[in-house]
Image 1 (cartoon, rainbow, N blue to C red):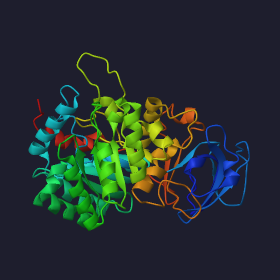
Image 2: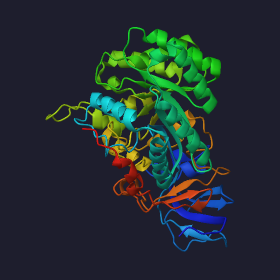
Image 3: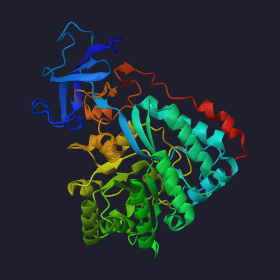
Length: 445
């Protein structure tokens, strides 16, 4: 049990060295083949006071001071997660809005119908709040959510986000991204949307499908962002069409405008079905433009290459290894949870990391892949104190019994201890029954 004192030690904890803040050569020198080092952490007044190399073997009788302590016996300690790409406004409508055939096209039409019928302020607020409760219980510290910005219902979604951002400000850092077709930004409505995002302190974004006027649309989005000092976040190439190269167009636009803000592009699936020469050209531009890439393996695995009565032939995941090899920041995230785009999910970043490791072979060596669910998305969200463990930083930690990666990723770790500013929180996820009153609507057929 975690000590109740505001000053205590966590002993014999394995930490992924890649998640340590700053350069700690004495700790790095002790890491094993999987990049884990055994350390002791001193927690004081809600902060990590110090990190010291522990003995080579966990010792339940080790005492480094008369302070209270908890011996983790080699269990892992991670910083709290950062979930950089979610869709909280769509979440948890599956029971009344199932996807009839699991395709992307059906997901679009099903969500549009559900939104038109049901998305009033209470409905969106309660579902978004449910998602936040799940994320918090599982150990997430910061979330970026895309919010559909077309249709009358969008006003309710932004208002629900505004309310929840304030109510949860002491527990979760929330960022909003508008999700709209890029041609909208060529209109007065698009400029008004950019103003709204600026007022929210959010991120300008949209989906960028193949379009003959995409360059002009991107130029306008970049101008709007520069005028308001906004960062950018796009959905790009969420398809298996090798002719979809909108990521390359985003990168080219960033270089044309000499954009200095942070750009993030999500999905980028078509990279994995393009020839090596095209990939090399795109990655070169992405690196020059300093764009961060977010992969959504669970959702894309669910949607991509879905043909009735046929086994899928590809995984729908972008070129994670090739991107990282080029020095391009790569993150992974939850994306959709229990909606027509992905019928499953519980806002648990450990589940995302576990399945991503298996889907995209992020193991042996694990290297710095743990950063993809913590430090890297925190950097892309410009949160320098989140997603890493270091002396002087908040003691926002997750304690796992899993001592090795094989142990960590083989069981659910439902018994994890989530520590916020040095104190253990209640990790009980919300009961699905909380949403029962929202299921009273007529189901979409």
